Length: 188
Image (tube, rainbow, N blue to C red; front, side):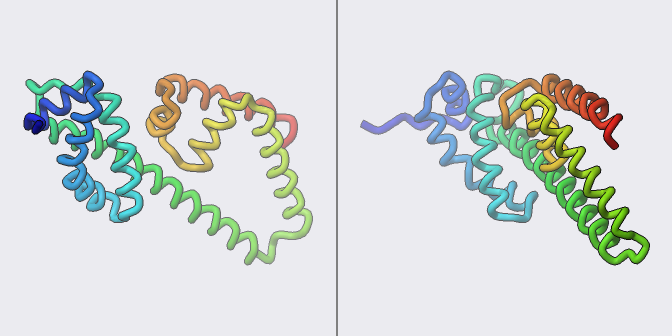
């Protein structure tokens, strides 16, 4: 028995009601075009593949929000994938700037004739104090600070990937930074 052909809009609505077969069919219809868009935006095939999978996970979870009177299914999906790609590009840009900055700082320290053994030892002590203070933070605050500042992820990406509200992410990062500052006041 042949399955009836549904429009992309009908498939998305059915997926929003939990129809996994409709979602599979929607994936088959939309993924080639969405992958092309992501590959163009991210200029890296592997990143585009990762974003395609992440985007479809989000599409599945938000499918019930789709309103066919407001947009076509493909247009609605493009907006989800586009926002995810932009967040990813921002995160990659921050991470690249952080790596470049650290490399420049390391090169400057290594090349500098003005830095003596005392300065290097002091920098090492400060680094150890910061690591120790980070370890003293509650696990959730430490994890969120590491995601935001060491991995360069946006608050939105962190919230989505951990499945917690954006406000919770922002609050915990702020509280963690304040606590970190208090822990370091006497030590640095």
